[in-house]
Length: 207
Ligand code: ATP
Ligand code: MG
Picture 1 (spheres, rainbow, N blue to C red):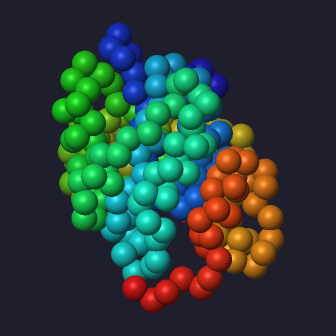
Picture 2 (cartoon, rainbow, N blue to C red):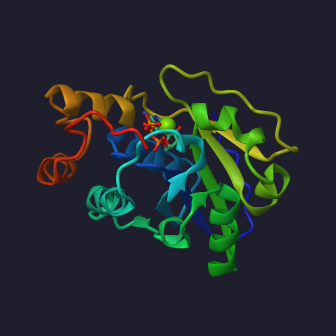
């Protein structure tokens, strides 16, 4: 359908938050598609520090997740990576991500990109009301999840269909652990980085 592009003439910055453990082609195609559809000038990928939803599970070191995100995005001039959530320390809440990005980018409209699974939980996020005043939310389709408007204030969210890639980081980690290939699920450089660092090779230790 026709794109609904809330426009103010300002720079348009997409924000793709995630654990990226590891980053995969589902993340990249969603960011690319939304950037085109919403005429974004840039998409910044923001790897989490310790994600609060995943406090009970093992997450790879932030520096590994950051470097994989850099490797995966480096060749795209529209993509960049931010360390703000990693450098802030502690648990990551999207409200802090958006406050910091807003402060660092005053003359910019922010578009927070999220897959259908994360969008469904958004009203439960910290300071949900303020979230929607800081950014326009864009929900992207994801295989296995139903994309619906979570009931944000009027016009707070747009839903967009992106090419369906049934890839998850959870599955990529399980494949590496089993010795199955992740070629073509994640960028080549990320496969090599996983192997070099020996990521996902063993059962996750109990935290
Ligand atoms: P995990 O299985 O560890 O949760 P994940 O594959 O869900 O990993 P995340 O880092 O949790 O990846 O996701 C970051 C963002 O990317 C979320 O908004 C998520 O919904 C979205 N996303 C992840 N995979 C896809 C995909 N295949 N298609 C569309 N969106 C995706
Ligand atoms: Mg996830």
